[in-house]
Image (cartoon, helix red, strand yellow):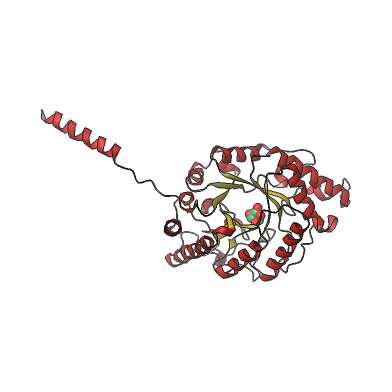
Length: 374
Ligand code: GLA
């Protein structure tokens, strides 16, 4: 055989060997966690529309559940009474279906990001109780029936309880009374009897709030509502809540005989500008340099602490996986997280599992290893 022929044979054999050698498939978050709980991400319209393909690649690779970050909120879906705009929500649901994901609708009834018309009449006065109930009924039926059999679960009511465990004095509460929660669950259940229904709130680890939510959900169930799970938003900081406080909240909610879900997980590394730790979205503070300490990069020590904190929480989630249906990150990568803009606009935060270059943080590898060893 000529030299050229011999080299050719070697190259061919090498190529054949490369094709037949077993390829080690990279293990992803959704693979590693599949026996324990869904792993989800909140996605936005820019991503769904294909304008952030690297984020979408991360979602398709690592996550098996999606929730709409904003496009299913009432102000987006029904900006004017009777005028529904489903373009973004339709695209979101189609994305989830294309990828065989558990699709979560967020959120049917919430005092925030509600359209201005909802609570008032043409003169700007509060509407009557009956009118508001009818408006909620129409909204819930229209939205839930549209996605019947396609959206698997709904955050029916968001944030009805305050940190001290009392009812939030929202217009919903003031005009209808506490029954608005029960009504919302009933309307959603009638509109799609198969859909899972959830109550969702933040600071659920605060004992007074935890107990207030527990009592409210217990009443709902005792009064015949379908409640599949309580969603514990996970907008955490580096020191609150403790893993133990979150664990207690999970166990307390699970004692109602419902599942729990960690619904909006992110961990801010930035200083909080007030002693009042809250996820109240209306808060906003002026940008001051001491509140934006890492504009270029996260120091190694802080990065390490962040990764450790993520791993500590996931260790606890895995321990209680029988009580946790889903863990959802509130966003995909650090660059697009809402945390960069709240409660102070224009900061640089590092709250998610994927960095600004869409690369997995060390915590991702450690969570995967931990789940595989279980
Ligand atoms: C709350 C809501 C979410 C989102 C976050 C902040 O937690 O449930 O939809 O608006 O606030 O972005």
